[in-house]
Length: 191
Image 1 (cartoon, one colour):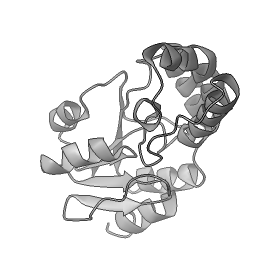
Image 2 (cartoon, rainbow, N blue to C red):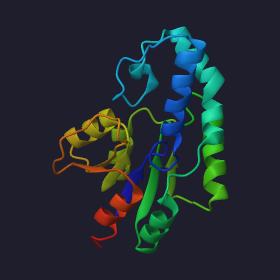
Image 3 (cartoon, rainbow, N blue to C red):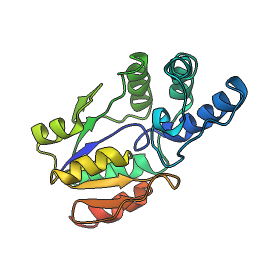
Image 4 (tube, helix red, strand yellow):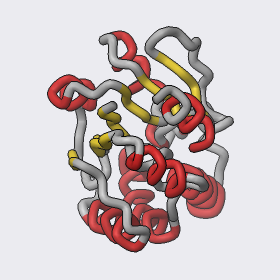
């Protein structure tokens, strides 16, 4: 099976770290409560920050988050098992777009853990285009908007949903998973 895979919030546990620093920034720097929707996956929709405030957050926290984030719990063991079973992985990530150095930091984390994917697409704005180009059998992502777009275009997805994110209705194209054990149950068990 050819599996498309996002990095942040799926392979690298950066989304939890992002939310932590978003709260610190909102409370300590902005001195307020600008949270408007905790189910939103990206800070641009989660808070009602101005463009200047968003830029200040990017400038001051993105690399801190990147450096502090490690691999998701259970990822290495499941990834190695799935590779042994013959599955192929294509990274399809927006990482490297907002802050180019974050791509290098992701490469560092992957190399330190001896993780080598079959193909990489960095700074991607249209994951549907890459999924179709690569003819992926399944895409694993944590952004409900991306999951809906892919599912609406007949791409099978695993919605790697953190507990606070929006719940989606499961169907033949959307399956919710919450950890790498769930992923293994649905892929590794169906050889």
